[in-house]
Image (cartoon, rainbow, N blue to C red; front, top):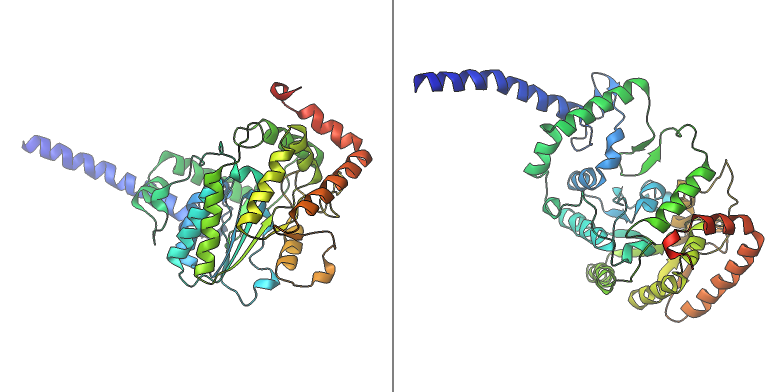
Length: 381
């Protein structure tokens, strides 16, 4: 027994210091952004791995920041909605709690998580998207109910960010990227994603093709679609909670590029797209920035001002959205950008979009043909 005890003590004496150093190193580098460490011995850390841990680090940020203004939605909001917009000057702290590729249930749960940590929540902005209400859009793999409506980092996440091999690999990649100033997507402390530097050899037209193809072929996006009553009720839950708590709620349909709407038409989902809008306005009035307007019909070139790709608009466009929602400097917002739709005007609104779609299609046959060529074979007529 003494020999076994001596062996165990020797083993622990050798292993524990190494394991402790392993964990401390990962916590110091903090590759996933949960410890709020920005520097390591004077080196500014470029947290390139935060993009794969959005649901983790944003859940933790909320427990620390306790924002009174929330910006919610998909990656379109993640890249486009700035918590520092002047409309939020007296509504701070504001935080961008948008996720990457969520369904509306995930959005609801993160809203509830924020409300748990900040009962005095005053303002909520949600950018909604057609795909978020697709019955086949399951929760993303990194979604974890256990970390929500908590007030601190849960033990499971602490172990994963400190003592896992994945965390060690992420720490090493973070240091390498920081030394070489080599990063693409990064996040501001307020949750807004931004482009640190453009990827080489990826011109915008190529990004458009990749995004359009991915959405038309991707499971849970446009390849297979059925409007979910359950997801509509999730949105209704958010609306009712905000009404009960006197929270100023603004909901808008994201201003993706016109080619994105063309892809919905191409895969035969335009009627479903319109029905989705009809169902939304039964729940609440919503600002519609989709369709064919001054912003969304920007020609596809190498140097676009409004878009990163067919799906994701730039912060400058997000600023115009905020201007419209909060009646801030409306004079600089194009008159056709952002229409408040309700049950009373939904049909005339949809007809106007159909009319504009026909005009845009006739004037942009090259884009229409591009989208048609990207259509998956399994839905070819």
